[in-house]
Structure formats: C-alpha cells, structure tokens
Amino acid sequence: MRAHPTAIVSPKAKIHPSVEIGPFSIIHGNVEIGEGTSVGSNCELGVATRLGDGSALRIGQGSTIRSHSVFYESSSFGDGLVTGHRVTVRELTQAGRGFQIGTLSDIQGHCTVGDFVRLHSNVHIGQKSVVEDYVWIFPYVVLTNDPHPPSEVLLGARIKSFAVIATMTTVLPGVTVGEGALVGACSAVTKDVADHRIAVGNPAVDRGDANRVRLKDGTDRAAYPWKSHFHRGYPEAVVAEWMASLPKS
Image 1: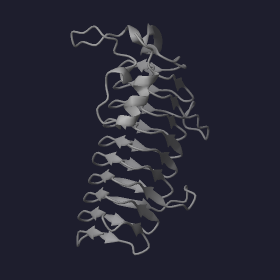
Image 2: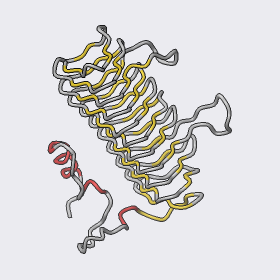
Image 3: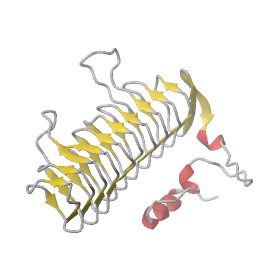
Image 4: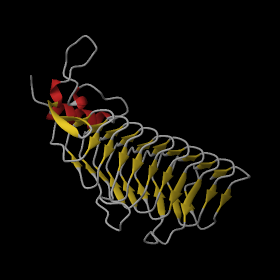
C-alpha cells in the first residue's frame, strides 16, 4: 500500500499492496480495498453506522475514488468503481461492476445497483431504490422514496436495464421505469413507464415508442435501443452480446 504520510489508515483494514491513498484521507478498519485501486485526497472510507449490518465496505479491483468522497461501511462495489469528487454513499448499497458515480451525487443506501450503471453529477438515489444493469441517469435526477413525507414508509423506485433518465427529472416513490425506456428532461414520473417507451412532462405522459427517436448524425438511424450504436466504455464481450441480441435487419 502506498499511502500519503498525512493519510490515516487503520491497521485492521484489508488493503491490497498496490492501492494508493491520497493526502488527508481516512480509511477505517471495516474496509476491504481491491488491487489497483486509487483513493484521492480527503476521502473517508468505512464510516461506522448503526444503520448497517456490521459488514465491511468492499471496494473492487481497479477502482478510482476521487477527492472528498465518503463511503459508509456495509456496502459492496464490484470491480471498476469510478467516482467524481465529493460523492457520498451510505450503508447497505450493493453495486455491480463498472459503476460510475458523478461529482456531488449521493446514494442514500439500502439500495441495489446493477452492472455498468452511469450516474452523472448531482444525482440523488433514495433508499430502497433498485437500478438494474446499463442504466444512464443524467444530472440533477432524483429517485424519491417517501409517498407522503415525512413518514416511515419507504417505496423505492425501480429503474430497469438500459433505461435512460434525462436531466432534472424526479421519479416518485414506487414507480418503475421500464427496460430501454427514455424519460425526457425535467419530467415528473408519477406512474410506471412501460418498456421501450418515451415518457415526458409534468406529470410525465407516454409519447410513443423510444425507437421513434432518430440520431442527429445524418444517418437517420434509430437512437434507441442505444446499445445498437453506443459502446464506449463497455467490455468487448458485453458489446458482442448486445449486438447478437438485436433483431437482424
């Protein structure tokens, strides 16, 4: 382990020798960090909480945690986690491979995130949320969970695989956004969105099949499903699987 002299690292933490830890970061004892991970300055990993289950904070191999980020104990992240700056992640967050969390985003814990999910900056993920694989959530999106605040009732939103939620959107408690669906910017999603549909507005209403949207690149190709043309940052094996699953033209 290569830790800056100003970093505070508990001897109880399980940290691969290749891990780098930046200035003024704090690594508590209930933490496991995988090979090839970099932790920036002023981070705090493994914050103790009575709201967890006592398990370790586990960070997978090849991860990058940028400065001023805070992770609580009792959460687990697959290989290739990447954060922006000043990210907060609470306890009992279970996330898969290749999770990207944008600057100033916060995850309130007690939620599940799939593989290769992309959160842009200033995204809020409420407790009990379920975000499936390959989802894109753009800046200032809020997934809410209290149907009549303040209360002890928590109904998390569910965002199914390959869905896209555009900037400044709010998804209300217990709502499901379907697989491959597109939610337009500045929408308030008050009811379920069906698979591969467009929902736009306040309240959001159905605007037809997502495959009606065309790429503005001069080709007039369908923009959705986006996996047919956007592959940057995804493993070759995953992309090959996507392409094999698409209908033959």
